[in-house]
Amino acid sequence: MAEEVKMKNHRLVDKMVIHVDTDELGHEISYDRFREILDGYETLLGTLEDNRTYNPNDTRTQQQESAEMKLSHKLYLSPATEGSYQVEARLYDDSDEVQPALPWEDQGFARVFRVIDCASSGDTEKFAEAVPSKLARLRVIEGLKKVSPQPAERITVTSGLQGERTTELKQANIIPFEQLRPAEDDFVDAEVIGKIALVDFESKKLQLRPNGSTRRFPVQYDPEIEDRLMETRYKLMTVKCKVKCNINGDIAEIIDADGIEELELRPVEIKSFVADGVEHSFEHPITVTVELDETGQVYLGVFDELDLCVYAEHQDEMRQEILDDLAWRWSAIAMASEEELAPDAIAVRRTFLDLVVE
Image 1 (cartoon, rainbow, N blue to C red):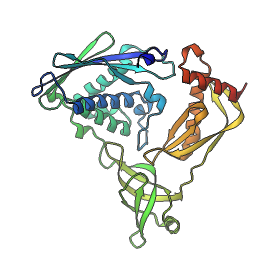
Image 2: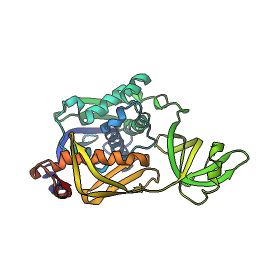
Image 3: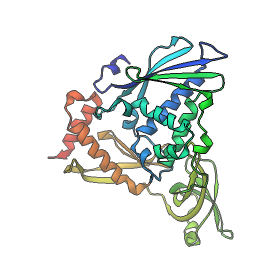
Image 4: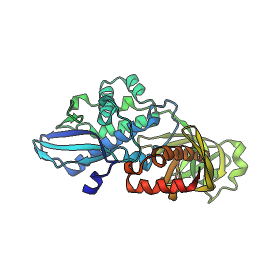
């Protein structure tokens, strides 16, 4: 840990002191409960750092953070002190990307407590404006439930590098989560990867088992895809349909299957990319392999030589995700001075410069 703190890209962004007092345990808190609180803050930080959270047209059904995004908001703990139960959590940016200096109210925990204040008001319209993405709203609600005090529990948080703000979270102020949740009839267009377990041609229904799940979903299908259903048994397919997800981002219901095709994971060949308005070409085209992530529903593009790992919900979005990531890596890593980079980023920089023809 000491070696990590000395790294140039280990930048302190914010800190907070969490003070927990419980009627039953006094100066103690259960490990499971404290882990839940920290997990809630990590969920909130990760969601609120993602620019897609603020896009009202966000149609994702699952939220994935890239490895680089996770590094931009890592929590480290200082030793706990007495006085009920009190511990300092420090928020560091361990990513290789150089971040601009932001005013205090736009950094780290400040965003989290703005959303807590907004949700605590009970104003669902105001909360929806603060978190426009419906998927992100579900994640935020999940985080809020974890950090909010339980019965007989009082939590006070002091945040800011200089302790600029103290917030007391009270049981009486718990957010009306059910009111803040998106409407239950909100379905979004999606592409579900899975196997057709059963087809009832008479009722025009099929049973779809999403990849990575043991659950079967009954789905009404469009008669126009019926001929293709005969060829689908035991094969992994992509099904175009509408889905509704629960608060964890897992599929809760599927309707209206109107497109189906056999899954084919296609590698992506990249000859050039554009960064800062300038086109850069590879001496030889690079090939990014495409696979499925651990959920079985999200496409993962990997090119180990550049430590590249990008996510896409639809396979036809993968090329643009790769191009965007290459542009970022060129500007933030290849064009940076090695004195500013961590050892692994230096290796990526040198490889990148070797691969590109200038």
